Amino acid sequence: MSVMHSPPPQVTSLVIADQVYRDPNNNKCFVLGTYNTIYATSFPCLRQSMSLYAALTDGHGTVPIRLVLTDVDEELGTLALAEGSVERANPLANLEGVFHLTNVVLPRPGQYRLQLFACGELLRELLLHAIVLEHAPKNDPNRQKGGSGVEEWKRDDTEC
Image 1 (cartoon, rainbow, N blue to C red):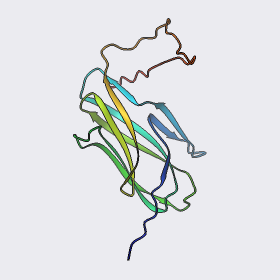
Image 2 (image 1 turned 180 degrees about the horizontal axis):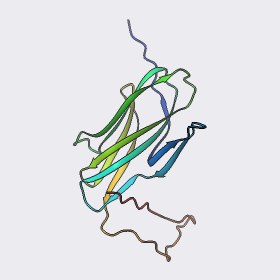
Image 3 (image 1 turned 90 degrees about the vertical axis):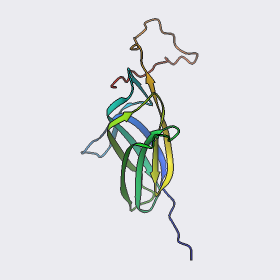
Image 4 (image 1 turned 90 degrees about the horizontal axis):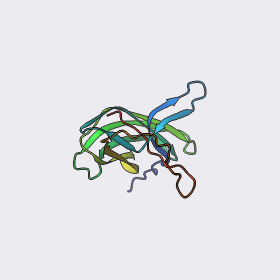
């Protein structure tokens, strides 16, 4: 006799940010300071905090959720972990979750993966780039706009 498993939830949004704030009056989430690159003057680099906003839909019952940070080749194993479970009473409702990682050490420059799992299945992953910053970026008044008319910019995230 086979055991039926309900399908895992679907990810509708996954964002790395400096902070995610949930307003207690209306329960809305505010995602502040999004990024996918960390600039550091040296490595290893300590990030005192990282937040990840996730929006999920579908899924049924109690769903175990796990967020894993690892290097791109998974040679270093798990560098940071957050896990828990959510109760899905209405599978059509959108569920917003916030993960807070503290004292995260990125041992070397390169690419890292933030992986979101539910029911043991990988739902989505984001690449996180760690780059050595030799000189702080400066605002260039002569900077040209790209061909589409959109100004190019890079985030100066030099917490490390």
